[in-house]
Amino acid sequence: MRLVVAMTGATGAALGIRLLEVLRELEVETHLVLSDWARATIRLETDQTVDEVRGLAFRSYSARDLAAGISSGSFRTDGMVVCPCSMKTLSAIRIGFSDNLITRAADVTLKERRRLVLVAREAPLSEIHLENMHHLARMGAVIFPPTVSYYSRPTTVEEVTNSVVGRILDQLDIEHSLIKRWKDEPSVTDAGLLLAAEEAK
Ligand SMILES: Cc1cc2nc3c(=O)[nH]c(=O)nc-3n(C[C@H](O)[C@H](O)[C@H](O)COP(=O)(O)O)c2cc1C
Image (cartoon, rainbow, N blue to C red):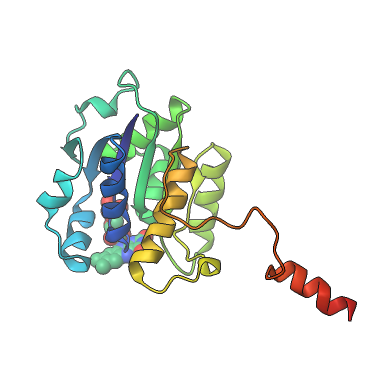
């Protein structure tokens, strides 16, 4: 499997890094692009260097290199993830403003009808953000806000990060064992059964 992975300057550099680590373990061929502000947030938010993050990918490109293979639809991929995705990059993707390799590769991913997962990070969301996300969702992109699933009772940042990355991998149909899945088998401890039992009293 071959994926384009981009990291932009939204908070959550750890999410992109963990995603790259797991994809590497799973032997997925990753083509990485970091925006200028992704490089800044890697420095601000993590103990890793930009070169170490680049080293996790199969291949890494400058965001200014619009002649890179991934800027053409003829370079075949199984999709693209922008993790984390800033509102600025999201807005550029929405209107096809392809002035760097991230927005160009996303534009290519959409035009070629490949999977595009945008790990869109902002809170609260303005009408502009919501409208951009709405349009992208209608174009087929997956808008994936990196939110916490409390039902798995995470106790560490690493668990939260893994749970978000696991659900991103689900969107790409990549098998993994990063998350505790919601129970398939009902049991007496299920909240729904407990509620039903309480109502029956
Ligand atoms: C520490 C830090 C955290 C930021 N977090 C966010 C964020 O969560 N979401 C967002 O849309 N922008 C955030 N920004 C602002 C973006 O970095 C800024 O809009 C930048 O122009 C994005 O450019 P890029 O998409 O090319 O990386 C943050 C900036 C800094 C320095």
